[in-house]
Length: 399
Image (cartoon, rainbow, N blue to C red; front, side):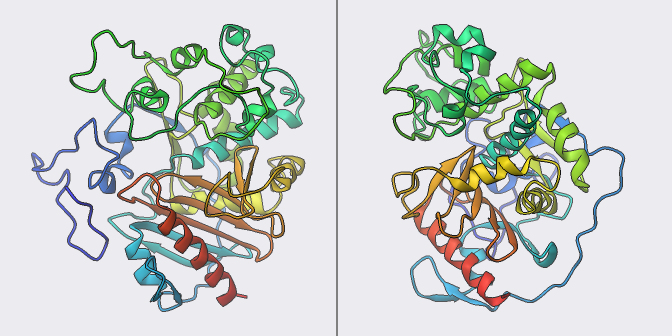
């Protein structure tokens, strides 16, 4: 089935009793099912709460401006309006914060202010923020070997890798991120984390990992020296999370709750998807509301906001090496501490997830923009480029 934009009639997915269109377990993240599924993860698979605590929510001042008619570039390269581009890019929610105030807030595709939306790899940056806190306390040292924290990995390709190399996705461990190959490592991750069943008709002799830890233990192949070059591997975030759990004796949802969510003044508890061993998927299983993602971005913009060490944010903004080999739409992009850097001049940080999830954090413009989407494809350089160009147009309009 094709996926419909917001301007088209919404298919009646999971509507009615019983529903006529039931989301298939194997393809819930594919179109058109993801348009419903990304806001209803707790109805599809096991999750664990990231408690917001009992405090009052921190109010976000409102100073709204109607940006719908703002002229931006379309995905085809012509001129269009921001409202039309949001439709064209399958947007579920858009939040623009400037100076900590809400300048624009839009919901589509049935999303509301209370809807939890799957973040995909934005979760990597959330995990990184907690790691930075533990580093600041001296509980974790990025210069040490991963095996200092997880000695079981001495029999894997992670032997000899430092935690910093893993944070920057510069280990040499073989891990394919081909989202269309159900049998490659990231396809096995879908099964291990509980997101997908074993594909029907699969080879009965193929050994599928029972959970994420078992998948990590199976990574035996070193395809290049550790630290040699960047290669995006989602599993790296989960290795980091296991190190964090090992040194604290706490599970990731508890850590995110205690160290960030209860301190941010969020409106809603968040959640993580969990595997059969109760492990929360650090690399992509985090769900939260649009405004609470905005609060997270604002914390980073405020150099950690007294929650995350400013040195951790600054290190991410330094970025290390730069170039289009990191992300083809960024001529001078880079990756550091589980954050994307747009370029070394503006030092804008980004939290990015497949299917169009984005938190854009600009010190130059004192802005945070959150865009939650459900693209029909995992990645799309045209939509990515048009979205980033639009964010710069918004920044200029609000200057």
